[in-house]
Image 1 (cartoon, helix red, strand yellow):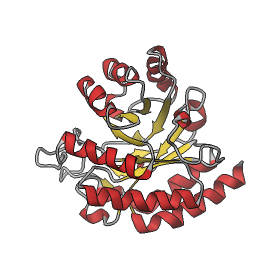
Image 2: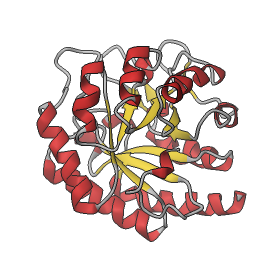
Image 3: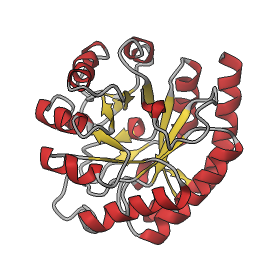
Image 4: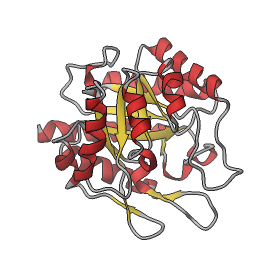
Amino acid sequence: MILSLDKIQNTNSNNFFLIAGPCAIENEELSIRIAEKLVQLTQKYEIPFIFKGSYKKANRSRIDSFTGIGDEKALKILQKVADKFQIPVTTDIHETSEAQMAAAYVDVLQIPAFLVRQTDLVVAAAKTGKAVTLKKGQFLSPESMKFPVEKVLDSGNHQVAIIERGTTFGYQDLVVDFRGIPIMKAFAPVIMDVTHSLQQPNQSSGVTGGNPQLIETIASAAVAVGADGLFIETHPEPALAKSDGANMLPLDQMENLLQKLVKIRQAVL
């Protein structure tokens, strides 16, 4: 279970837990700024918290898209966030060779949705001993996610969770089937990736679009149907973000959202 991490805050809370941060690590100052605000809010509302940031963006539509500031540089920033605020941090990996490297800096390794069926990658992440989050492929049914979970468990690692991030709907949209949350909870804790599920991928410009005005809708529905956690990418100025700005939540809107979601959680317990 992901909540067994000894660094996670408020583990006795009956709240959902939150994975949040910028899409990509852009620089140290921004990462510290976002983390500080999120730590303040999650402590206030007693929400267990994991800081997220991609140290490298490997899945890009265009060759000129931002991919990162350098692997080691970005990973060291994640480690600094963890040390400064005493919180767990997470990042995604894309190749088996990255598992041990990233595990030296972070507490949770995330397997991207497009790669969740890659057995070698999932096993490599599991064998680091770090917690593993498995993004459900946009092309997979909820029922099929038991197999990636079993790969982690069969590798001797029981710290595993599933991240729901929507299902491909036509060529340039995603849809969330909330029936999948209770189905997948039979295999592992389930986290709703609110912001990525609102992407509009494969736009003609080569830049992903999004519907951030629906963040509250998706998050509220996920909490109401029993999601164990939420995944929300956030940035002080999404329009200036180097990656996925079209579907991120402005940082100054996070408190209002969390306040509402905590009330929903309390209502459904």
